[in-house]
Image (cartoon, rainbow, N blue to C red):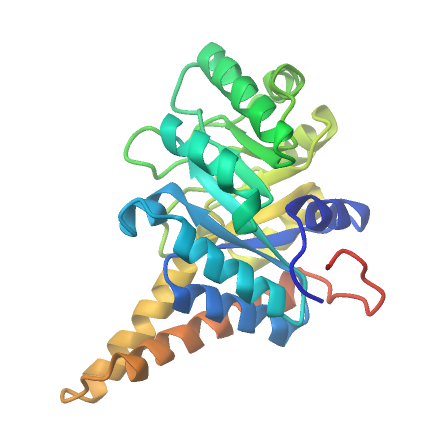
Length: 292
């Protein structure tokens, strides 16, 4: 078991009517905690690096991606690398060009902040370039809440429009707006499960759920049963990480070694990932051939 591709992980999820969990990485501690949690649960997982995380690292994506690639390669379970919510055109071009060399096998081209026609045109152009590089491509239709006004809460993806969008752009996966919202710190979002089922029937590619940190686990399970095949999780990890660090520092005002309090945050991430994977994803079979 080790590094694998997003396509293989999503295809495996589709084949068993399940989902692959994709966790956002901000620091090395995030990546280590995610992989440890996945190994504890015995499930495959995706590590995701977003445009916002790349900006946090001063626009340098290669160091953290390279570290994630090495972690994936040495993991006891299949791990893939995905690039998430890429909006900046220049960054998108750079990532498409260098992703393969750094271990990433997929990219989310996020043009949903444009109107429908521009979303289609821009997404289709990026998808063609990404496919030439062998990348699996995700896009978004129907803005998902919680993104500084660009993604208005309450928006829903129309099934007929989604089918046309997929055909026109040639994308491999579609993130849909079905009631979740980004950056939620409480799990009380209500998903439109009938809409998920309708979307799954309407489109020919796997559906992706963003903003999953704000959704109760039992509802996530129902969403997977309804047709979601990739589940993105980010904020829940940050809540766990920050809670661990804060608890450690509150208990020891003289602490000054970051290894001690960062380890507590990393452990909390691992526990969160293991719990979610254990509840939502089937363990990797011993005959799994997706890893390389």
